[in-house]
Length: 242
Image 1 (cartoon, helix red, strand yellow):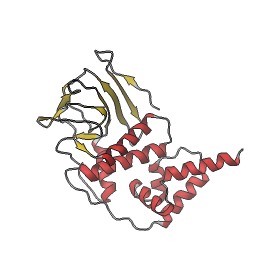
Image 2: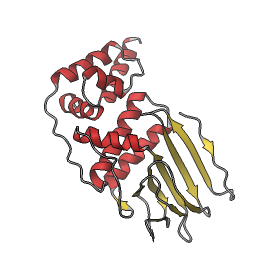
Image 3: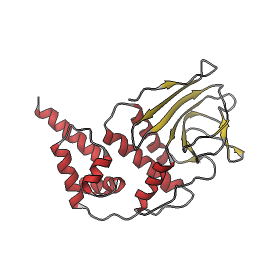
Image 4: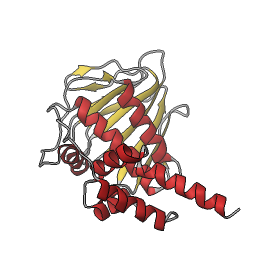
């Protein structure tokens, strides 16, 4: 896990940890639990993707105060002014990602397999249980020790679900057919080097298809994502050494 930085806050019951992980060019993440702390208006150079775990908050963005609670997700585009904190008589426990515009554009382009502008998000907070669960799972994965393949796959799938469901310009996902050759190339690679901390991008280059397409076709043919297949191979290897 990357080293976490404890952010300085005025109240001892407020806590926040910020860290950066080396996936897709680098990504900052935040985990916070606020009782009294409230953000003054500010902006980020990156997107801000927030999801509430517990409690209620009143973040202010796009000219309005928003009510957010457990399971709610909100996305701010780079440069959008926002602030706020917990609602009265409530705490606010949430997690957030700060992906770059380049990463979000990449996600949109991998979904459509065509050139796309950087996706934009409008409106307020949304209650989207499937998207929230995928984002939460990705955030937890990036907080704990795990392989590069697990981290990248989980993050890519989560961001893809967010863009598909909530980007202002609707995304039509490119249809994928059968890719026996690509799947075989990746299976052969993983079987030959089961202990290597290989990245999703490396496997995609070997297969000569996009990372998102690789995840879809590999799962369709094997029933597993590449990282799950890698774990299976490692378990088999460990058993053979007993």
